[in-house]
Length: 269
Ligand code: ADP
Image 1: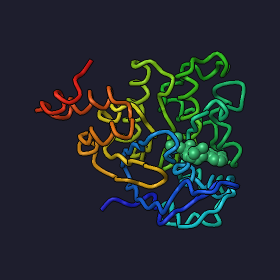
Image 2: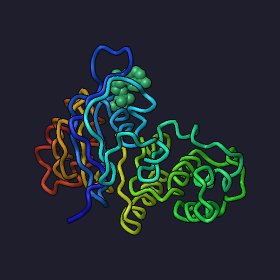
Image 3: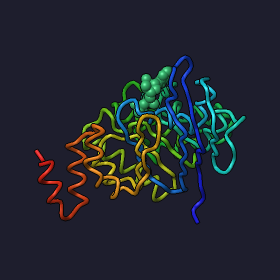
Image 4: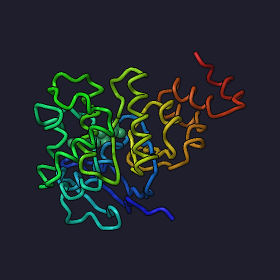
């Protein structure tokens, strides 16, 4: 039996001053080695959900929180974001704010240095290796491309050797080739290094090619959690929610060897 690395039980959360909860009675479990995509229309609560994983909610966003978060078998209650980040690595949507030092090697080593790890440099070097950034270790962060900066933010999380990596839109501003390179790195981290991976992702072709499970957020609740094939064959449901029809349609095509009904209903352009 694979270990449960993250569990949410009945999590409900309302941002300060908001009238309605943004998360409503959310329960889920992630097993070690899962590669999960969180999908849903804008504002459905995907980022807010992920902010519960490493304690940002309720520690930094002090709204109205109830329910339970269990990280690696222990309740997150009373544990700081710093402590939880050893288990839950997080790359935020605005990842550039996570880059805090002028050079690549100093930046990637900064978090373990800050947490008092004597081997902070080795941790940094290892994280650069895992993300293919060793060659640029001595460059200034501002010299990197957007994709490399995103990888550096990922490397910064990896330097803490977390069990779980949560990445909010890993390929948001990248062309398809660079996007695929990032997903290949995530796949290696998942398959060869046993990392549990959660991505917030809109691109169905990457979900189809790399993820095993899909969680659909709908107005603050989990509408369903399904294996990827089943999830992407719910084409009409995804379309109803306005989730990127052409990609979803293409992915459904790739997964469905007999896609006549899909073809008739949603012809590819
Ligand atoms: P998604 O990631 O699915 O787009 P979010 O979790 O970012 O959704 O947002 C869900 C809802 O919570 C939205 O209505 C958004 O405006 C609101 N929200 C997000 N962050 C904050 C915040 N810091 N303060 C108040 N409301 C917020």
